[in-house]
Image (cartoon, rainbow, N blue to C red; front, side, top):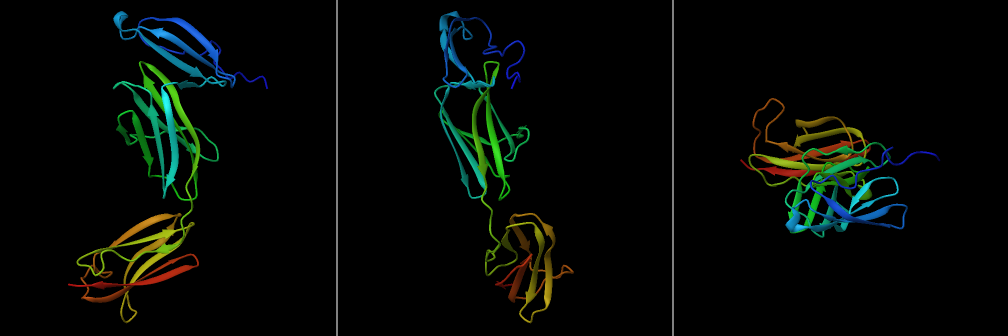
Amino acid sequence: TGTCLWTANGDSICTAVNNQTNTVIATDGTGGAIIAWQDERAGLSNRDIYAMRIAGNGDLVATLLQGWSARVDNSATVITWTLSGTNEGAVFDVLRAPGSGGRFARLDEPKITRNGMSFSFTDTSCRPGEGYRYRIDCTLGGCRTVLLDPGTSRIPPIDFTLDQNRPNPFNPATVIAFGIRERAAVSLRVYDAAGRLVRTLVDEIRPAGAYEEAWNGTDGHGRAVASGVYFYRLTAGKFGDTRKMVLLR
């Protein structure tokens, strides 16, 4: 198409300190190349062999990546990767973009766990029914590279649900969990055994997602209600469901 994929003066394969010598290059079979060299960043007495792959579009991909996986766990995306070797100075950045397209944005303070040479990141901020693209960057020895690009992860939509409150029976408070499959006007109300409204916990439009609401056993004026059987009803769009709970003072 005539579009320049690489920068005008090429891309830096390595910007580490000291000398990089005895460079060799080979095709990666997909329009890019793999470059290897003898590296003196740790000093003349500790020469190592490093390598870097540069993709056909100019992206740098660290060859220290040994393997990776990406999966959806309920409403979260879990990405794991294993390195053939690293040092304590390696810094990872997690970037995310909408699955439908758009720019990658760096996630602030991603929670990355480590077990030896294996690393794991869990994104719990995903929204049901939406897709996300991820990229893991690695900065090592002053050189930042694309470590892996696992593609698009799609979070399955949740159904309309209303769970049993927990704990039940309860004193002094309980939690009610529910799910919304799509954006809808939502109401969650508590009634007594005679069908009288005791407390409105939710009355607003909410996007699709999983929610939890707490009830502390008080009415709409903040007064504690008596022990007994109560009912809570959820309506969301055309969905409606009612469950029973017991308050013991």
